[in-house]
Image (cartoon, rainbow, N blue to C red; front, side):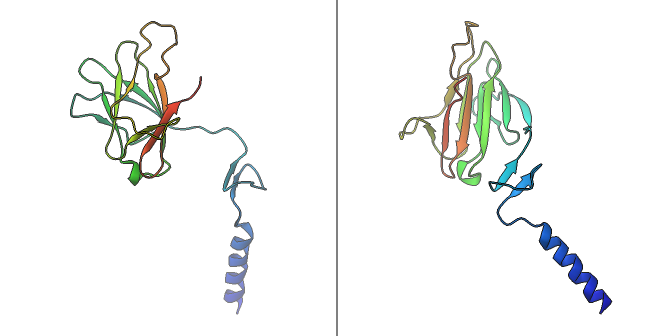
Length: 154
């Protein structure tokens, strides 16, 4: 009987700490499925480009520094259908080479259009050094079928 009572106390204790409406980090009253009251840090990865027909796979990280070089311009996103909701911020950190973005599956749709854009998506370098290249940093979001992409509006 004592063992039964101890087990019940433990189970009730676990139930009292569970949250049905959301998970809160640094908050006792989450207002969303995930409510973070504080700073958030995301994984940053730097990838070198791959040669034609052998693009470097983008599989890890959130903020990706792309380093294309002569003959190694290609990067490839995973199949959008395999990773619904997956988000990447890609930045071409070179000042001389265009990074080319492909996908293992799904088309590319600009955020302001319902018409697919053919691959590759070109991310230009800032060759003039004036900060006027809007495709130097792009965000890509999988909708479960295709990739939606656009500028961040910096």
